[in-house]
Length: 230
Image (cartoon, rainbow, N blue to C red):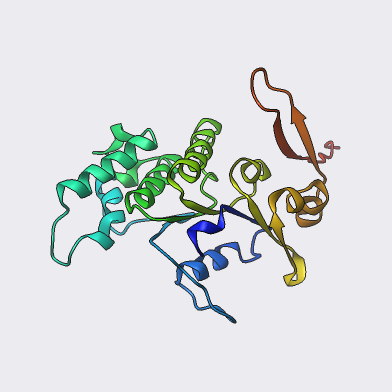
C-alpha cells in the first residue's frame, strides 16, 4: 500500500472480510495469493482495544512511538511532544492523565487515533473509526482525516458503514459483495445508490443539499422500512 495511491474506503456487510483485509495490508496475516507492497510507516486504529493493564491516556498514545524508541530506552522529549500534539489534534489534550480504561467507548477511539498519529506514519489504516463516536466527534474525525490527507500527504485507508464518509474522504472505494465478489474503482463510480442497495439489501438514495456559501453537500441515505406493531 503506497502513500501515493490516494485515500481508500472499504465497505461490506458484517463478516465479509473488511478487518481481515486490513490485517493483511498491515502484515498481521499472510495473503492467500499475490503480494502486498508497503512503503513507509503504517499506523493502525482497530475497532476494539482492551489493554491488559491500566495505562494513562498519554502512555497509550506514547505506545505509538514504540517503533522509534530504542530497546530499553525511555521516551525522549520529542516522543512526549509528539504524543501531546496528537492529543491536541483530536481535541482531547485534557484527557492526558486520565485512565484509558475508564473512558467512554468514543473517547477510547479518539485516543487510539491519536496513538496512530503519534507514530508519524505515512499510511493510516482505520477499522470503522467512527463506529463508537457521536455525531460531533464523527465530524471532527472526518475533518481531521481529510486535512491529514490534503495537508500532510497521508494515505488514509478505512472501513466504514457510512457512505457519506467515503464521499468526504476517499478517492477510491472497495465494496466487498456477496459470494466473494467485489467492486473497486473511483469513488463516484463505485459508491452509488445501485451498488450500495445491492451490498446491504436495503434501498439507498443519494441526496444533494445546497449549502449557503459552500459547495453542495452530497450524502447517501439508507431507507429503513419499519413495520408497524400489530
